[in-house]
Image 1 (cartoon, rainbow, N blue to C red):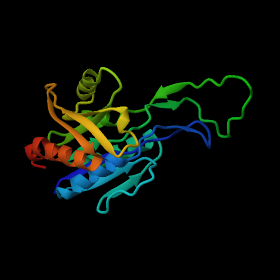
Image 2 (cartoon, one colour; image 1 turned 45 degrees about the horizontal axis):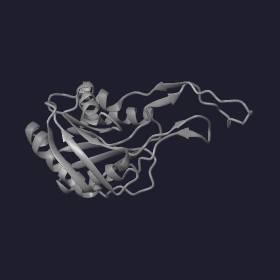
Image 3 (spheres, rainbow, N blue to C red; image 1 turned 60 degrees about the vertical axis):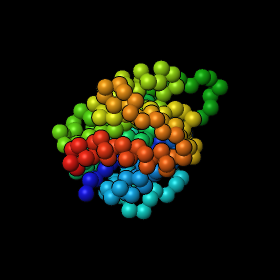
Length: 213
């Protein structure tokens, strides 16, 4: 029975004990992908940032907070999985300094020095075995197809799913599934659950059955 690793939700990068950088990811798409994978008979482990929803019963859920937490959990879990689907929207930046106490107002501008976080899907793609596969999500605001295909190549993904900011914290989604040749092999829109079922069927046919996992 194939074992799938799914990342889901946002991550948080704390500036001080009460403030943090994050985004509007709700975890709904990750939950829908997990449910669709379970319906196909897969074993599912979800690495999730903080969300206000319940993931489907039958999935193992590993809760994390920061992007580094998510990175560490995925690196540990991926060797025992047949494939990974990066649905999460982890923070791309972290502050250089995290204040141990709440930052107080001073009346002056506050300057933040931000550094890039580790790229989870790129790491998994670079370290996957021949019998493993990786599917990424690319949320883009402009030059969508070009940027998604660039990410597919840079992160060594087997497929990439292009979506847009309107999907965040929404019950519906509109996506394109792109393969390494640059071809759009599926366009899907509707409820996130319906979109997830079609995407998982495509992944099943193109990757799971191909690798025999």
